[in-house]
Image 1 (cartoon, helix red, strand yellow):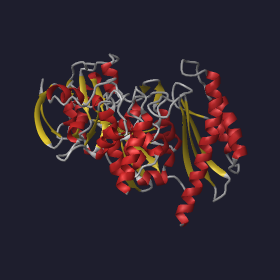
Image 2: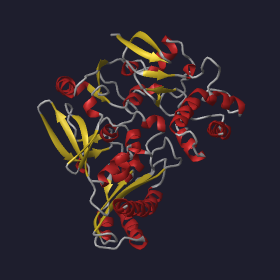
Image 3: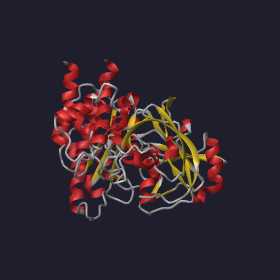
Image 4: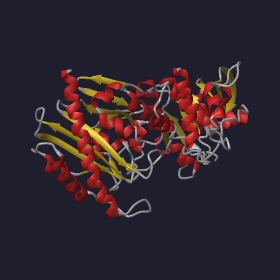
Length: 298
Length: 156
């Protein structure tokens, strides 16, 4: 398949890229991993006049930790997320979602920033990033802003990013003690698969064995954007963690979801699976909370 | 407008002038005549275009040649040494892990990368590492056995 012609830009520094986007942002597509943009260009879905590649900008590729926050450069790949030891130790739910994305070959190209700005309702990373309370650092030539990921999506493929802006980093607060996250994806096969449903969960406990003092559940592929499940979270608050309350939270999450019928699955099936996956994601989150605590004392 | 780039392919620096809308896959096959890297779906689904780019296996159909400027690239042609086939290639031959052969270059490169990181992988780890490479002859069992046999041989 031929790619349509375009003018190619390869800025070496972020400042240069931001200036460029200020000039041509309306006609430009940003190229990061290319696993989405190049496919859409090959299949004729988009034909940008300009392509601005971020692949030479070192400052977008790093993982940094300071003052209780973890900063992921927008061009960190899903493969790097999955393999990074500090992310495995503190954000296991994020590793699980990174490991569910595409295939090993795709993960070596696809970036965290790309998986966010493409705003696909079934994407793997946004639900778990939202469960960990992530914020986005968006920059343009004459300014920057920090936006909670939760408010970033408007609909399938639609976000609050402005044409001249570049998503530069994803910022995560280090999770408190006695907390953990989990991610579960349901697809027909295990690789190169679009989620039928995915669920990310985060719980923080008030001490080693509960009760739950903070809970976030995010449902993917059951609404136009990744969806918080407020009534499921309310079920969990103040309760001791365990199978019984996780089951009830699953039932509440199913009611919170707004799935549609399509060729991949019926809405009814998706709603049922929200219940099952929420229970499993909570179990994973609770297990991670226990494991992190155990590591702290070891 | 063409851009001048250098690709370090199989240990050799290759200077090229390419249009920015050409993929690494097309430049490898058409300009460098390295046709061992196959074009299957051309959309990142099948893995037949797998190459090792700066130490990591990727779909070369989803990388622009200009993005690979300066990169180290290993294709299937660069795997065999002066003394003959690479152990993974030999294992595929010995175990009958090749049917039509179209997926084989990608399978072998993904498997070689896995074995470098993890010399004795479990079946599960092998299947995960190869999950981006499709075999439409569905000869997966023998492919997994071939990769396992390399791990076992190195152990003994």
